[in-house]
Image (tube, rainbow, N blue to C red):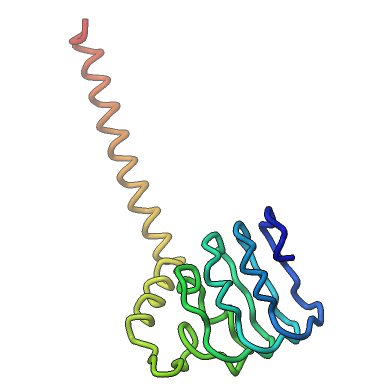
Length: 155
């Protein structure tokens, strides 16, 4: 599968797969969604997966994975639920530190901000503010147009 150059979605969830995750899956340069959840995969997550920059969705939950979660630009964006059910995993974003690394409070702060932005109240307030700005701008613009037409200023 690592030789497939145009693969965008890989969903092998709930297939009873066993063994290790092949490092060759790191060659999937354009994959956007990667789901291997609910299988019997074991071993560590290959470091090569951290180099996939187009990866938007990762779900490795409910396997038998262990070791440190690779660190990379995309792997820092995945939430804890991408790895849940793998009691042997360590490192960010799971609560257990990896080696000498400790999970810092700044990571939890970033997660809290992400949760706040996905909060329905936040989105509701955002749309209210956007509509108020749009409505007032529309009223002012129409008033200016009416004034210009009634006075016939732009002849």
